[in-house]
Image (cartoon, rainbow, N blue to C red; front, side):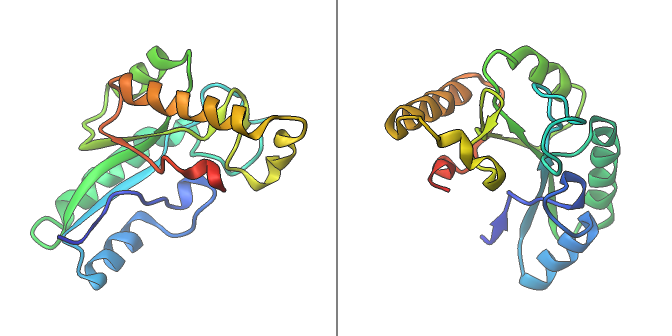
Length: 166
């Protein structure tokens, strides 16, 4: 079966294209299933003062879900659309994450670790965060967070477990 469950769209700020364009492209490629999975808004840093283009604004989350559900119905019988989200695991914020996610009818949730504290280890603009750090210790902290995300019960899928290599 040809599927793609990890997609990002213009709402997240670091991708381009509208949701429906992704659906149409998935159909062109012959995908049987396509997951729509933009980024959960940032909750552990102030999005207004943090690095731009990291995730969708919180005000967009309900509109995102509504659009996904509309597209799921519109393309029923053409492509099996799944409504998802990539939600960062942030240690100490598990209950906030659960509260934000719980009102919505997700088909799946991707749990990913991008942040160690306020440092996004995947962001090319933050490579200075490695300065003075023991790389093996950073890897240990990263994989400890991945393990905690898996054990949290918040997610259905763990996303790009090797993203630290970036």
